[in-house]
Image (cartoon, rainbow, N blue to C red; front, side):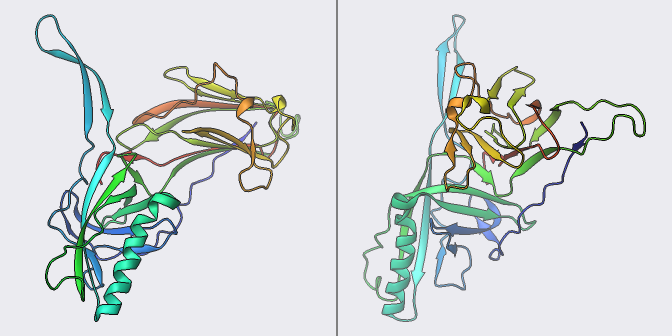
Length: 322
């Protein structure tokens, strides 16, 4: 069956603030995005709030805890390196033309940080002059309490905010994608005899340009009766059988979304969260594999495929540093 490969078109990125010199990062523009999606430029000194260069830390390489075993000939051998949650120290200056404007700015920005404890993480966004953007999910930990010194708290004050990051790696703002779609089958005798498979069988080399492994998301569009994804270097695979659900085979245009971290399978029935199909995976043999840094051969197969059947793999590369 013919395959159609469509190019991925990245979404348009919002404008960024002028870049400045940032410790541990270099020449970049940094924006904080609170859980509501409101953007707070942090390196534009023309605004009434901005980050202070002195005292910034935690934006560099990830911290690891090493587990080792003694070696009989002396020294030790590394057994495991465990990446630790990242802590970012972020000094911020807030001001206003009078006390009431300052107070309004102070409360608004403080709330933008603290609401991450109730509404989900905020995002630190680092934009380079060439347009590349990396992001880091953050939670407020402590520090929004001002200096408590004479003359502060009237028209200006500063806070040293500590932000906690459960995933220490920076994430590319633009996802990478692989798309495979079944084309229209031709007549067996026109222009010459041919055979079209009832399966999409794709063998593709997927490149992860990041520094560490990623866990991709798969979107399968029907029709399909059995879905198999395999990582060729390790042989790890997982199989989704829609016929194991009350719904039955995936029909034309219907979609199921498979997330690998955390494991999640949702049939898209039009409801906000979809229908849980996690039981349709071939447990316990199912291995929702990751993509390591570099090139990895993968294959995906749809039994019962026909015109319109498609597979989309997407992931955000992850990096040690901004």
